[in-house]
Image 1 (tube, helix red, strand yellow):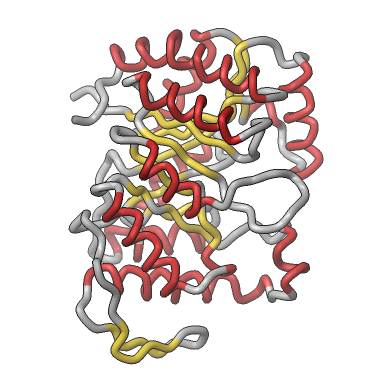
Image 2: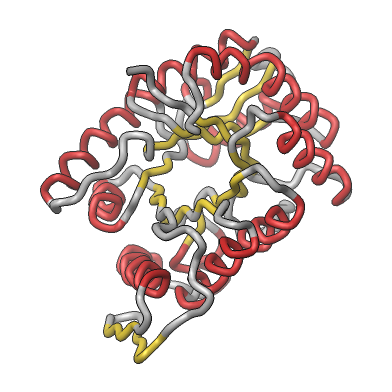
Length: 314
């Protein structure tokens, strides 16, 4: 049976000169019919403009009618899980069930740890507890929880999410992230992983989920990559790849898709062959005009080809 593929578009930074530019980008995606969802990266501190992901999701709930939207991915170790559970439930209610929550532990290189004087060594344990608290608040009438980092007595939220089983996508490619996804997640959303790395992680998640007596739907494995119609030495992708290499030490060409529509479609096909069904594609552009143009080319040149090759979910 042909794999069913859904393609979303995401932002890491805020490349728009004004809010009006952002809404033009959102409206383009909403009107396209081919974009499945919008995703906002998470960053609380820094001098580079980045929208807060849950506030952006709330705004998208009011602006759009068709698109789903999520955070790619929210760092739970920086936040109170009760507030996150309540925020997600509220956004899901007001959007009539279009929220796609995705969570992770946050990069140890993120500026928040030092600025907020937080211990990176606790991020995994805090996130595991927070995920359990959130999932229980979404579905239970009363929650009592005794953990090392969080304690609740008789806690409840109302209204609870519209989606009876609100998704809980988990990000990260470490062994701990694999175990976390298998034990608590309803899906996995990759970040910088290549198709080969994604295939290895997916196989490990399936095996760990089976050991835990759980299953994750085959269409709940996602990946993301940056794309650019043009050449690697164009100013915007060159700067983006240089920054990526400096930050991570990894080869950016293996994680960026740059070229024409066929090149971007070929990269999608590599991930689909690895078992990925959901995508978050990030346009690389120097400014508002270039980001809009890159997104429009994706909508017009790639998404029709992808839809013909891999039918979207109903």
